[in-house]
Amino acid sequence: MDGKTDDKSPLSIWPSGVRNSCTSWPRHKKTTQFYWAAAGRKQMTHTAAVFDVDNTLTPPRRPLRADMAAALGQLRVPFVLAAGSNLDIVHDQFLTPLHGFGFRGSFDAYLCNGATRYHCECESELKIRVVDDFNIKECLGPEALRTVLGVLEQSLGRPEFQLPANLSVIGDRIIDRKSMLNLAPIGRPRGGTLADEAQENRDAFVEFDTQTGYRRRYLSFLRAELAPISAEKDLVVTYGGQTSFDLVIRGRDKTFPIRTLLGAGCKEVVYFGDALFDGGNDAAVLDMIKEWSNGPCPVRAEGVDSCEETLDRLRSLGFLRT
Figure 1 (cartoon, helix red, strand yellow):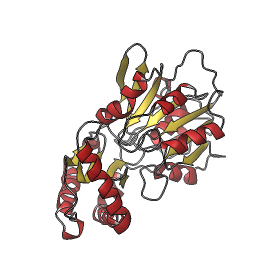
Figure 2: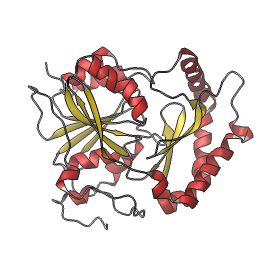
Figure 3: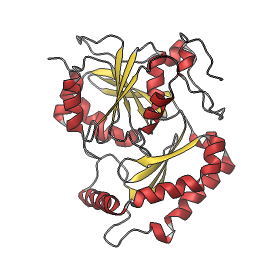
C-alpha cells in the first residue's frame, strides 16, 4: 500500500512503507469496527480512549484496584486496552479484578503490545474471544527467527549483561507470546500475580537498572545486532515494561488499536501510557503523531507515571461522569 489514498478513506490511516507482506491492515467494515457497550452510560461522541495497562491502569505487575475499576465504569468515552502483556497476565492482573469489582460492559483488548485483538464481555460471566490473531514467527520466517533467537540467547551470556549476585532469574527469560517476543534478563514468572519473592526481585532489578543504565545499554546492543532484520522485516525492539525488552513488528504495535478506532469512525483518540519516551513500548504512538500527514492529527498522547496519575488525568479531562 502506497499510503496515497483519499483523505476520507479509512485506508489512509494505515502506515505506508511497511515492507512486510504479513503485516496486513483491516479493509472491511466487519474488521475495523470496534466494540464498546455499557448500558445507561452517556458517551462523549466521536472520542475514544486507549489505555496501556501495567503502571497506567494498575500498579506495576499488581492487580487492578477498586478505584480504577470504578473510574472505568464512569467513563464517558468508549475505551480499549493496549497492553504489553499476553492474555494470561492481563486476565489475572486486570480482567478478573475488573469483573470482580462489578464492572459491566464490553470492550476490546489489544494484547502483546497491541498485536493481537480480543473482545471482552463483562456481564454475569467474563467472556473473551479472539477477534484478530497474529503470528510473529510466520512474519519473520524461519531463517530470520533463528537469527533473532540466537542473538537473544547469546546476549544473555555476554559478560556485560550478567546480573549482580543479589538478583535471581525466576521464570523464563525468552518468552514467545506468538504475536511478539519478550526478553526478560531476570526471567518472567508465569501468571499475572507475582509471588513475594518475584516481586522483591523485580523491585531490586528496577533499582539496579535505574542506577546503572543496564537496560539502556542492553537495548542499544540488541538494536545494533538486529539492525539488518529490523530493516528487512520491520522488527522493532523496545523496552518492555520495567524489566524486559519487547520485539514486535512495526504496525502490529500500540498504534494498531488506534488505527482501528480511527478506521471505525472515531474523530479523536486519546492514548494513555507510561512509556511514551524513546525506546518505550508506547513510543510508536508518538511516532505515529509525528509522522501524521493527513491533516490535523486526531491522536493525542497523555503520558502518565502511575495509575494514580491516570485517574487524575481522566478527571481533569472531563472523561468521568460526575
